[in-house]
Structure formats: structure tokens, C-alpha cells
Length: 633
Image (cartoon, rainbow, N blue to C red; front, side, top):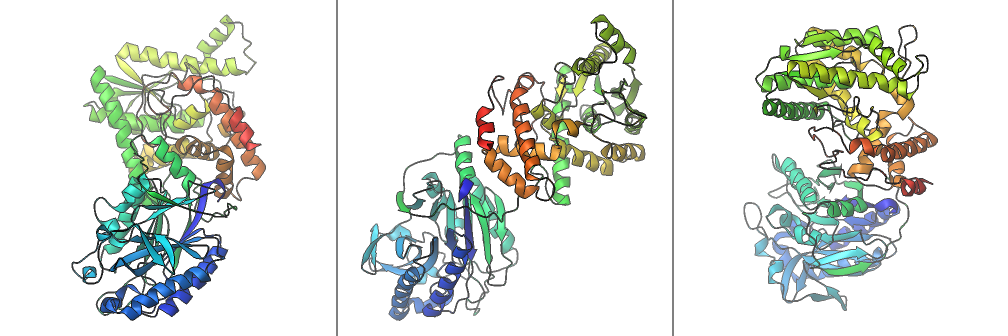
């Protein structure tokens, strides 16, 4: 359970309806098997001890007595397994029959949770046999001669890791407004277990998945859904064993329907606990009875997928939808600024690189939204000492392909004069040499904008802001920065998406070559027409930096946890030493460059990570990174 990862399983066992001994043997076998795999919490389906479809056999004392005996037998059989087990069972409490979930650990029964919502419509007629938890008139029942807590207000808490706390709701409880999960999570449960028996119908799997995702999202919890399977009676309905494990609206694992199987995944309870603290609208209350249990806090081998590109959807359809939405947000923000200021021109510095290409595409769309035409967008390229013909030509081809006004303003002579005026040798390619070019370009853009009554559109992206990879009061400054919250890894996909959808052959050709061009500020003279200054050789891979940025800012993980996830995400691509070095460099730059972020221009937030000092990220410019660097040691 190191770093807060709790390995969990939702299991659909083989069942025989009304054959308690068989069912208990099968579940005991599975508990031992999955506990050996490191699972600390195992959930079986609703009424798994007897089978959900026993119908009027639930009125038979023979079955009900066998169910209680079977439950005690299952607890005893799994006593040496270091995991908590949730299993569905019918139990008589205070003379009434309840559809229950029992929580087993270390040979005993920690508690019993009765079902609240008893369906009695369509193919369901549970009210024929069971009463609702609302009818419960006691908070304890006796099982095997031992008093056991009973109720819907039980939260089971791991003594050694209190963030590992779970509650239980049963099947229909999830499908209704005001589900028990809401109060359980408010009371501290970071995981909700749902022993369920949901029969399969056309379209139901999609809706069921949506409910599980929504329940985990709105309650900021892990959600374990264990579904009844094909061992149930098929007299009138069929069960598919659709097991799922979700975390904060994301499905981590899902079993294939129609086959007794399992879903297994690690739920990050530290992350969930931190998200609840972060979201001020998550209202906690101490309304539950806490039942404590012991669990070894051994390391957990992670099986969950860790994407190396957390900002980018894995599937093309999802990426295309996200790209379209981001373009709409960016262009909508800029269009509002154009309309509000009454400007008639938008000025973009076009380098022939990724960021400025994206900014120009967004500006063209914004101009149309604001009632202007593409020709009202002025694309300015400003070649200097490091500019190559490749980037220069791509800039012109893109601008003309999109129908914008295009202007070339060479700045080499102006920069030479400036360097001479301040006494800087022209052959010393240091920081002053580089920044003089960046600031000259910003001055040109600002002055041109003033001349034409225009507005300078910034091109810098989120990754550059995080690393401070900009010249203070140079490319750092603009009148509205459309890429301000778009990370570099996502910029690539946005440019590729636009190349496929822009409708201009010339623009698409330029964009595709831009995608193949090394990322560079081109501030150092080229060698034989080739770029020699490559950004990622200086600041590190953007794939890594964006990964570090996401888990540092969005998730707030400790450095050692970020590094652990990076080893999984980039295994076989980067070695451990390279990852460690890259993460150390990221923290140093992130802390040292806050002063630039403290005075960045306006720009639209498009995703869950943004560094605007007016919104998401307020950090002192002189904060120290020592605690983060020490954690890595």
C-alpha cells in the first residue's frame, strides 16, 4: 500500500443457486488466490452466498440458516488472508429478512450493511422477500454468538493507513438519487463497495458504466462494482458478470461481460484524500460509525495503466474531440478580447515553430468569430542570427495558406546595433545575446500593433511557463496569450489535428513539416543551414516535463511518487538515472522561474492544469525547492 495504492478486486465467482457450500468454497478459493496477489479489498456480488436468483427459496429457513453458517465458514476459511472481503448474504435481523453485505477480516465479521433501496418493478420483486434498511431498529446483530455492528452508516478504516477507508452500498442503492455512497464518502470513506446483481439488457452496460464513473467522480472516491454472473438462474433474465473498478470518474479496470471473471486495480487513496482537501465544495462530516481493521502496509505492485502523456487522450476519437474543444475555447477567449478592445487587427509573431503555428491557427478562427477576416490577421516573421530557411519558409507558407497578411521584418541589424550600444561582443552567444533577439521581436510586434490599431497575440505554452523557458519581457509578454494553458505534448496534437482539418493544402504542408522540425528558439547561429540549438537538449524532454508537471501541480504527489509513476510510464524509454535527473531539473526550474509566471498576460484556461497567478497557481517567487529535492534523495 506504499504511496497510497490499495490493490482491490471485484470478482464474479461461479455460483450454484441455493448451493451455499459450493458458493462458499468457491469464494474462499478466490479470496486466497487474490490475497496472494496483494489484494487488500475484495468484493463479491449481491447475495453471492446463496445466489441472487433464489426467489421464494429465500422464504425457506433451510436456505437462510445455511447462508449464515456459510458466512461464518467463509470468514473462518479466509482468516489468514490479509484482506477485507465484502460478500452479499441474506440475513435475519430482529425478525426481518435483509439483503445484506457482510465485511469479513481476520476470521471475523467486522460489520453488516443492509440494502436500502429494494426494487419492486419490472423484472425485480425483492420486496416480496426483503425489507429495506430503513426498517432497521437496531445497530447490532448476533452472528455465531458474537455481536456485530449493523447499519448503513458503517465506515471500515485501516488503522495503519486511515486514508484506506471504505463503505458499502448494494446494487439499486447506486441507481437512485441520494445514494448511501454520498453520506459514506462525506464521513470519510475513500472507497465504496457495491455488491450487485444487475441483469443484462440492451444498452444497460453503457448506462451502468456511466453510473459507476459518475458515482466515483462526484464523491471523489474509488468505486468497486462486483456483478452477478452466468451462474445465476436464467429463468427470466441473464447476468453478465460486469465487474468494474473506477477512481474519480475514470474506469481503472473492467471485466469482459459474460464470463465469470474479475476486475483488479490499485485505487490511489492518497490522491483521493488530497482531491477532497483541494475541492472546497466537498463537505466532510463525522456521521458514521468507524470500524477499524488491521492490514499490512506492504508495497503494492502496480498493474494500473500510467499514461506517459496524461494531458493527451489515448484514442484518436477522444483526441480529436479534445482538440476541437480546445480550439473553440482558445478562439472564443481571443474573440472576446478582440471585440471588447475594438481592435481591427491581430498581430502574431510567426517563427515557423509549433507554438506560433498553433497561435496563428487560433487567431484566424477568432478573427472570424469576431467578425473580421483572415486578412485582418498580420503574421510577422522576424529572422535573425539562428533562423533557418526551413522555418522561415514554413512561416510564410502557413501564413499565406491561411489567408493572413504576411510581413517579414529582419531584426539582425537592429540587434547588432543594440549589442554594440551596450558593449556586448557580437561573437559571444550568451544569455544576453539570445534575449536581445527575443526582446527585439517583442518590441517589433508591439510597435506594429500600435501602428495598425492591433493586438499582439502571445504564443508561449504551458510547458514553457512551467520551466521558465521564455525571455522575461520578451516572448514572455503579449496582450493575450492563447496557448497559456496548453502543454507542449498537446500542442503537437492540436497542430496535427489542424493540419488535417484546415482545408488548405499549403497550410497543411507547412504544418506537417513544422511537426517534423526540432523544437528550437533559433537564437544561436545555424551550422550549414541546420538548427543547432535544440530546446529539449537544454530543458529536458517535454514528454517527461509535462508528465512531471501534471503529477506535481494537478495531483500534488510527492516527488518519490512522481518518480515511481514515471518509471512505469517511461519504462524502456528512459533509465532510472535519467528520470531522476530530469525530475530534479524540473523542480529546480519550476521553483526558480515562478517570478515570470507571477506577471504573465491574460489567456484562457483549457484544461485542469493552469499556472495563471490570477487563478489556479499562486506561488511565492522566492519559494525553496529543498523539501522536494530532499524527498527524491
